[in-house]
Image (cartoon, rainbow, N blue to C red):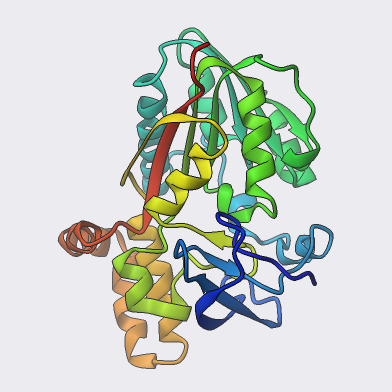
Length: 304
């Protein structure tokens, strides 16, 4: 375990603390989640170091067990493809063609869908050996099996870097963003999605909120802190918006709460069903108006 400071402003003046645990995968232990009094970023301290954190990504970790998009079609696969297409549209709104690097590509679903778009060459970076192997075998994606901190790429060789649900897992996000900045060509873009610590769901579910996902999520940001973290690396034209993920976070969070409050189990089963997903859409919309569960953000490397 290692002691950490705020990953955005490097201060060590927290004003609130929650006791959190691994509710998703069930690996033991409790952790202290602090809120920075300066920029309101949430961060774990002490936290597992880069070697220790690997035990918290077991074989059943959801990102490494998903069904292949090329297998038999079902409703979940179609919904997944819809979400991936929305991500692709976000990329295409920034650039129409180029070289894209998907950092934290998991099993390669987004990279696969993006690679089918005309004019795009796509590669990925993934730490987990099994997920990297599956991305290559299932979809033919060229994947660098490594921690992103250890990746070496030529400077100004990439047009877009995507980081879908990756930033919150990084021990040193400032170091990684500096690397991304060097890899991007002038006018290139970084595009990412990360949980929003300032969301209604975070305030409602507290230590049961899925967005905290301790100890895999080492830092959970809000819109202003995220803008500061990215802008301090030299990026410009930062903007953020809600795109997707709120429904899934809601369902998982209710499920976590149901473990201590059995009367919620029926609500969780209903929300998990296709009918429940449709019926809950107005509730998700209302919650997102007060602060979405996740933020999608983009920023550009300046043109010289």
